[in-house]
Length: 292
Figure 1 (spheres, one colour):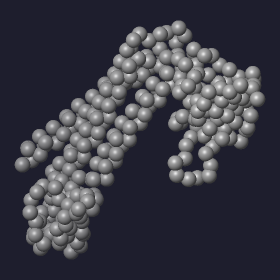
Figure 2 (figure 1 turned 60 degrees about the horizontal axis):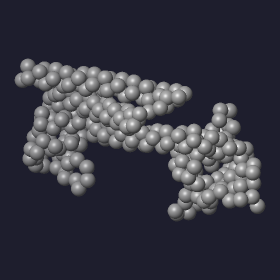
Figure 3 (figure 1 turned 135 degrees about the vertical axis):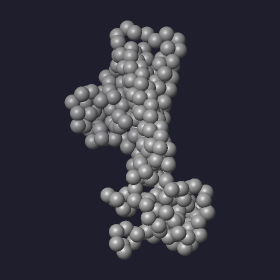
Figure 4 (figure 1 turned 30 degrees about the horizontal axis):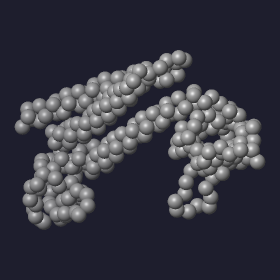
């Protein structure tokens, strides 16, 4: 029994180390690809060949996704190793099943009582995922951590920490979603960069008009633009981390406008709390009108 448990623990540690090594390799690949692509985007005169940029983005997405997957698997391996360690080193006592519960949502559980010390009983809900059948009042072997008696399992139920499981799952989903959104943002900014490179910058007076009051179907703020030659256009800010709402307090503010149609950028000399130029992505709601 002990030899088998030692072998299982060693196997879990090997898998955990393998997944962590994979995460490091794929992470370095993603960082290297992102650094190279970032340099190419900012290097003067560098032009991507047909399909090159899409290929770079694909490599980054695949490498980052594999990295996140390896991190999640390493976490699951660590939890499994922890459960095996408890089974090997924990204190074994005979407890009693007080209740068997099947839940419409979440994991099924068994409620058990088990002795700790002299005449002291503790109670715990143990995740029931082995498929073994239990009945109320049935004796059951409970294994608990001597240093933390609330940490328990049985020989058949690992009672993995479902909180950490959900943290890993949700964290992986959130990171993957953030990765996808980051790639989309990078592609959109690349497209705007090309549009601005084609048109250049035009100085104008702009006013940010948020969509108030609060209601359903709200849209991003509108940006009214008055060029120096008397022409006007109305833009709408695009969804981005570079929000324009904080700039609503300064109407007729000087800014530079670049790009056309769906790919436009409003470049303010500085943001509300920063000195560096602040770029807001936007798109045109109408065509430029003549001077009033």
